[in-house]
Image (cartoon, rainbow, N blue to C red; front, side):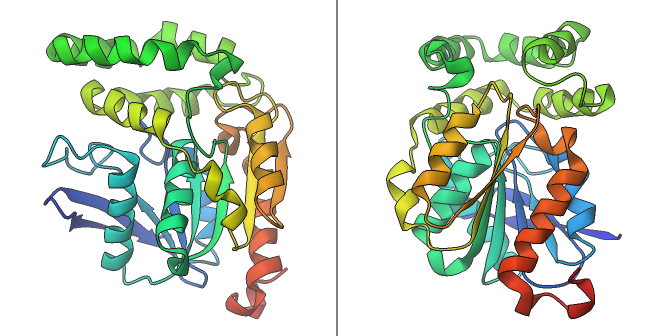
Length: 297
C-alpha cells in the first residue's frame, strides 16, 4: 500500500517526519519507543492500513525527523507536544494511539492533556511511568543513568562514535538475543534492523529522552482513562516486565489485556499474527460503527 511522507514544523521549528497510509476510521497513530524509528510496526502497520488510516511519526532526532532545533526540548512533554503537531498537520482531530515502550508514556500523557483527541489506546510492552525502575526487576538501570548522562555530556564526540560502532555489532546482537528477546520467536534480520535504528540516534539526545522517561509518571492518571484500552504485554519482557502491564490493566477501567506467550519487549515482531488479529478485534468490538461493514469479520 502506498505510503505518503511529510515533514511538519514543531513549535521550535524542528521538522518532524510522519507518514500516512490506508483509509478508514478510526485513524491510528503509531508511536515508538525511545531510540526507535518504526521498525517495531513492520508487520502491524500494513495489516492496520487495510482498514484504517495509519499515521506513523518519528520523534525529533529519530528516523527522518530533524535533530531538535532547541537542544533543551527533549522530554516526554515535548514528544506529546510534537504528537499534537503531527495530528494537526494530518488534519486528524481524534485518533487511536498505539504506543510501544516509551510510546506508552507518551500516549498516556497525550490522553491526560487532551482526552477529547484520543478515541482509544493500545499500550504495547510499556510502563505508565518511571520506565527504568523495573528493568530486569532490578534498580541498576535507573541508578546507572546519571553516570551515562554525565559521560555523554563530557565526551559527546566519543560517545557518538562508540554508540554508532557498538550498538549494531555482532556482540550487541548476541547479547540482545540472549538476554532481551526470545531468539526462538524473533527473526535475526528484524533485530538487526531494530538495533540499526537505535544506532542512528545521537547518544546525547538518547540519554536526555531516556532520563525524562525515567522520571515521567502517568500512574496517577490511569483511573481517569475513559476510552477503550487494549494492553499488550510480553510474557518474558525483561525491559518492561509483564507485571507492569497487569497493574495498568487493573488500574484502567474496563481495559483489556493480551499476554504474548514467550514474548519479549519486541513482542509485535515475535507474534505478528496474534497482535494483528487481537488489535483488529479491539477495533471491531469498540468502533464497529466507524469501520466499513465489509471490513468487519
